[in-house]
Image (cartoon, rainbow, N blue to C red; front, side, top):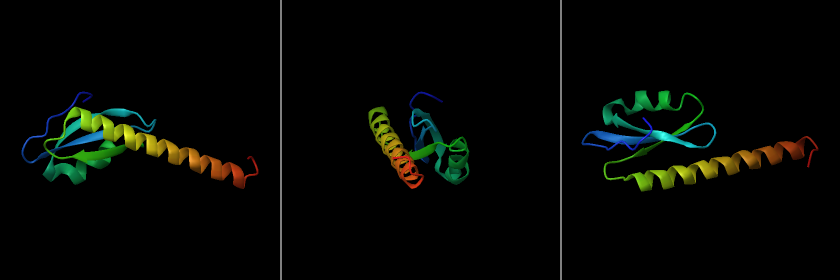
Length: 89
């Protein structure tokens, strides 16, 4: 689902950042199914973030954008380290 999911009682909102570090949507997930559902949402190399009831779309988008930026910075740092180790500064 690509638009914001509203969390109801006994549910949470799971936002997903894909392997390209882009926000790819939100999912309303039952708390009892969280452990089984989150790995499938991350299956294509993405990351999932869990938000409790009361989180609005702005908060979800800001947090996922922040986490995507951090992930991209980590990728770039690792690439620089590998390049230095390989003598390609």
